[in-house]
Image (cartoon, rainbow, N blue to C red; front, side, top):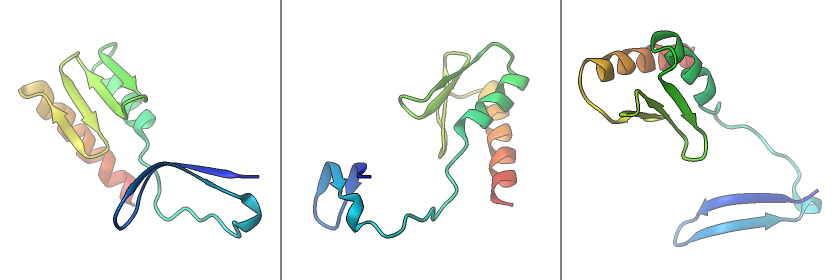
Amino acid sequence: MNMILDQVTGSDENAFKVILNGNFVKEVTLVEKPFELRALSERLNRVFPGLVRLREDIGAIVVMEKIKVTQNGITEGTGLAAERVKAVFEEFSKEGKK
């Protein structure tokens, strides 16, 4: 079985894709738990029913068509709704680190 790595960054250059021959791969280890974007979108949908769209293609959640949330936090949007989204995001992030 071969492995394909997407958007690999190295010390000097970036590669679009790297294909590794499976015969040379001894072990694959998960170093860090991946961010649960789908779970966060479900939680946000409880607070903002029907106003949450999960955009897995860009790795973001869009709330009310104006607030954009990624695994790093709110990247677009301001106001009271954005503050509420930020509070939900921070609570979700704290729970994920436990």
